[in-house]
View 1 (cartoon, rainbow, N blue to C red):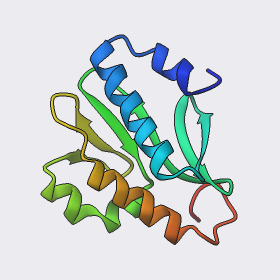
View 2: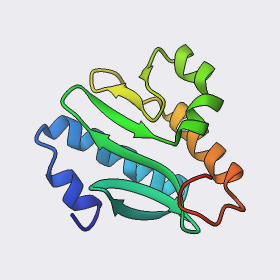
View 3: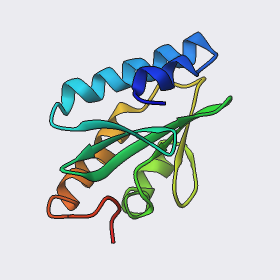
View 4: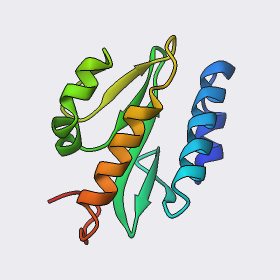
Length: 123
């Protein structure tokens, strides 16, 4: 897998593929400074070489990975949104609209809190 289009082609359900593509386009428009990379077969957005947010798709949900530090910081927002989550990812069910407000909070927090980070992952 070389780029985001390769990732999208691998999603069997056309509705899921369209939903993710719309979200990627929204991120591209809102955060043109972010770079798109594929690592560990997952699409990710980075800023100055540091991880900002990553995604994976399963049958029941879109998994969003903003790093555990960010999930802890935004835990109240995640709970309020009614989303299931683990230490490393937040599950956005396909049957529900994507909560762009929450995705924006994740991205904004990571951009700001990792502004001086020189490593891919938060240390």
